[in-house]
Image 1 (cartoon, one colour):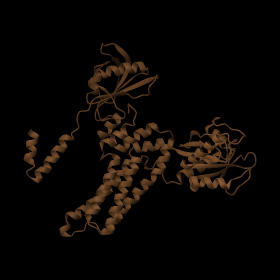
Image 2 (image 1 turned 45 degrees about the vertical axis):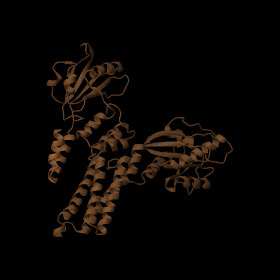
Image 3 (image 1 turned 90 degrees about the horizontal axis):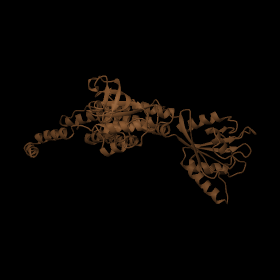
Length: 480
């Protein structure tokens, strides 16, 4: 009732209406006291040590109720470790533990945090967790610790997403890329572009404020140059997505060619095991065989396809159909021929039509039997002895990265969400530049510049909708 009367009173003047909006915004956006949460943050199963994390304003106070040590946890300093015992509600000892204390704001989540290290027995983990739940501490949701770190300003949204990338990285390149993003390499680049946009739009808006005085704070030519420079930087960042995606997800490579050309032999050599059946009988491979191999820090997924030829065998016909689909959808195709038959131009043309010329590597196999040069071949190998394999690796990397100027040390984009934000920002910037080139009013230019800045803000989480946040953190594992 008081709120309604206050609203009626303050709505009498426009100025008071603005003041009231500020009051309501601050009131309804004040951070509420979060529940205290807990989760086991080490993998399930038996091991030497397991770890449980507890985070929340009263985390230390609550855990102190089940800890028996030389001194109460409430009297300890931050970033200290204490030996003692965890007990249940009947004061029975569950296990000897080490308890680490992290006091707000100097913790991963920005809240008071306790980490309990104990012997890695699943039964002990269950008993200690139950004792913690009895303290009115709830189970953490997937990614909730990292979400709190973001909400409490410990990391921005792109860094939070990098946490998951760091956990799931499978190669050196993707690991280094995730590490750089977590360290803020991408955030710094995005924030730098945002600041450039803010500075530019501020000059335009300043001119609008002094429109009656006919003052020019930035010449139109200079304005166009400033916007063009931001567009260039933004385009470069968008271009990095291809490298980032390959570094994160790996490169799909189809091994294709005539039957009995050595596709399965090459796959077996790459994975260092007898993965695919090798036979002198053509058409041995009927289905697609998929294997992952890390080479020079990059993950490659090789697909051993059925030999492509005309056949009346129904199973082989299906295998050939799947081969064509795999070739069409792969990042690269290694077209394998042998020294005896050479390159089949008809089949090569078909594969080029499916995959594109730039994706195809023309390879001659079985040079251990007879080394005949071929003007159309890109590389020669022996899948039996390994001769020429390193040259194949070098060519795969060069083709996949397409002589990219990016490395795992660059600010690169690996997320489709980030890519979409960048593309929207680029579209707004192009509109603002066009408006400037047409000498349109500053309102049009300013609006597009602000929209571009908002699109970039979504990357680091300055502007975030709840459903976006929930979608990001629901993919995390519990405990992180």
